[in-house]
Image (cartoon, rainbow over all chains, first blue to last red; front, top):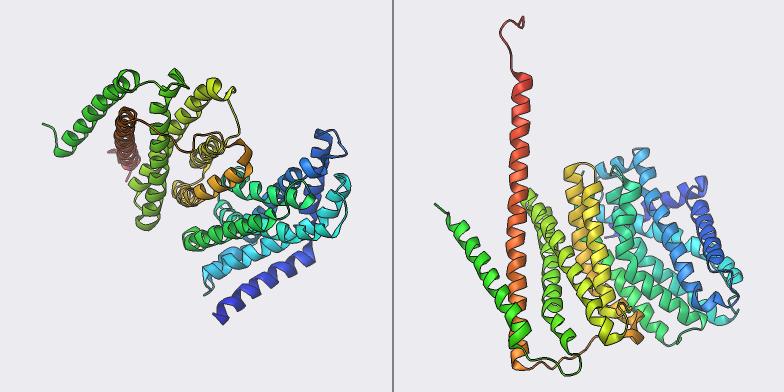
Length: 226
Length: 237
């Protein structure tokens, strides 16, 4: 098990280091979130009080769109430089490879959320306060199931002819429960819902993560069987 | 001379025709009308059986996808694809009959009501499943992708239901408990049996057609191979 975790950590550290040196993923993802926030702000007419009502939906829609790019990139880059083939040839557990890629995707998505939340708060006139700290677990637990299922399907779509089309087709229908729950939790934190509901919603997001991660781990050998 | 297999499926065909006609008669004549909803209530005998058949179809996609990933035989993939198509058709019946019933009862064709919304999401998920099959690259890759999607999509069904129930808690309009009289229950049971038999019959025919397609493609491949390797006398060899 120690060897298994050290494999996970080695691949994760390599992904983080690679991103640190190239900054190919985090920058475009964060800018994509910003652009989506702007598009929706203009689409809704820039209403001042939109923060608590439409804001959470807009925020999570922008995270989902950015995550599509991030998940796809995590495998496309690997494929193009032949690194994925080398990893699959190496005597390592494929579950460890999946968990490392999933944690990497989660880390980058949370990084994008950290960058995007202040911009969102300004654009959508969110009332400042300590209660906003609750957004940290909401964002992390919302990003976790997205990363779990997104990593699995990004691996599957990476060798498809029309992968730009296949990945959204695979991911978007299955992301709906996560989106619905994460938006409800964000709305509760921003004041339009009951804060006490938040614990229940966070527990639901954690269950989604466990379900998606367990199913993905069961299927990952098939996915990487090239 | 019919084989035993053909005799069984001919029996299923006649049973589904008989049950279908019986269900129509029962829904319109045998079962009494509901005093508050009137005629609109009778759509129940199509709406509920179609929902049962749709869920059965999605469960079939799940099981056939597992079988395909384990055994790798194309017939399991054909079964999953055929079941997905039928699931889409039956869920479309649910999505069409729901609003027809809802207009006089709820006063609007569409409400974002948990069960109706869940069915809409399932419909969208399995349409995506068919599109993946259409736009996938190599057949074996496409089949593997579709099988993985079919498994995750089925695991997602309870998550969809619970999250939509949470999202649209204020819109919960579906009757949560329906007290049906004996005749209504019998009519609903017969209609459900007719839909389930129809599902299995169509599934069988669809899979058979796909297997014929495979056999035909194999024959065409063989004949084109023979043509290209055929050596005419005097070719200088």
